[in-house]
Amino acid sequence: MSFSTTRAPRRAPAAALPFLTLLASALLLAGCASSRGLEPQLAATDADTLAIGRSLAADPLSAADFPRSDWWTAFGDPQLDALIDEALRDSPSLAAADARARSAQAQAGLADAQRKPTLGASARLSGVQLPETIAPEPIGGDFKASGILMLNFAWAPDLWGGQRAAFEAAAGQARAAEVDAQAARLTLSSNVARSYIALAQAFDAQDVATRETARATRLRDLARQRVDAGLDNQLQLRNADATIGIARQQAQAAQQQIDALRNALAALLGKGPDRGLDITRPQLLQAPAPQVPAVLPSELLGHRADVVAARWRVEAASRGVDAAKAAFKPSVNLSALVGLAAGNLSDLFGSDALLGFGGPAISLPIFDGGRLRAGLSQRDADYDLAVASYNQTLVQSLREVTDALQSARALDAQIDTVTGALDAARQAFELADTRYDAGIGNQLDVLAAQRPLFQLEQQRATLRAQRLSAAVDLDRALGGGLAPTAPTSLTQTHAGATTP
Image (cartoon, rainbow, N blue to C red; front, side, top):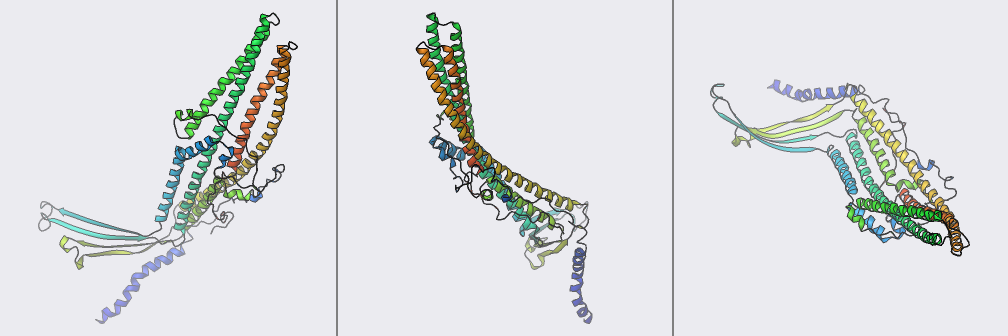
């Protein structure tokens, strides 16, 4: 009796000793698999260091606001408003962007589930009967049944924050996908507006060709009369016929462009080509005067969806680096299995049927052939790639704003110049035509005056379309009225930091 009482207190510490020894050994060996020397190389660019003042010196920043979410209404065409609303509602490209966002959200949910405890239940009924030719009685020839009910618990505590970092990385990617879906809407509305403007230009080109055909036809009729009267020869008549042919070809080309653009708009709406036949001639107003907010460039970060999405990807890559670093450290897994097991179903719920197993387990990578270091190196490269993409997106966004603003100003000046030249050419043509009618001038003078008139009318129609497109580009470059949720601060903790 005394022997059993003296040994009983020693058995519990003796059972725990191997686990404590294992834990101490693991901690001592923690330096065997090390992340030392691995770190990202790049840092995110500060937007305020990208100067734009001199480039916009001729167009100083104003107190203008960023575009509204329905920026296209400034063109004053109800049909355009309806087309963009229809595209945002029915386009398959937006459905694909939304599906990608939902997929990324599901991935974030899976990463979140990985860091939570799991509890499962199972029940099993099995039986066996061995033939007496293999096992004699009482084993052979008798059917033996068994039943098992179990609860299985498992949990890996997030001691170093690696699981949380993995979840936050997936969540960052999901937020980037959500912003990409918003960017897809801006891209779609911009494409509809640009195609609609091109349609307006095609109708204008058709009008110019029609007017030119009418002028050339009138000159040919006059030339026929003068030839019949013996006042002119066939040269003037053939010149007039050539001018009519060129004008008709231009009208035919414009009609082809109109048909193609109607088909393109129908496709953007997610509809068949017949939908394009219902699109009537655009009635666009003059493009609004170009203005950009005085808070550029820093405030642009929160308005452009592509910049915000790139920032989220930098945040996600940063948390991916943290998750990879945590894999170098010891991990603990807790597991427990509790159940009931019995050879007869009637005994399954008896006190003797209790089954239990469980306890903590610790693991630590020591020698893994460089797998963890390679994984961390890849995460570092992913971070650098995300930072480089963000920096490039930021530079490109400022370029697009500057290009759109400068183009709008330059096109306004060109339109004024061409309009003045067109007025002068129209007066010259009218004067030459009047002299020809009076018999003072000849048809060559009229044809010479007619040629620049046709060219300038076409040029002004093209410039007006380009000016409207520049307005679309500026609204898009300024974010198109979007307000996506951006990270509170761009992570720069990894760049240049010393990795333990």
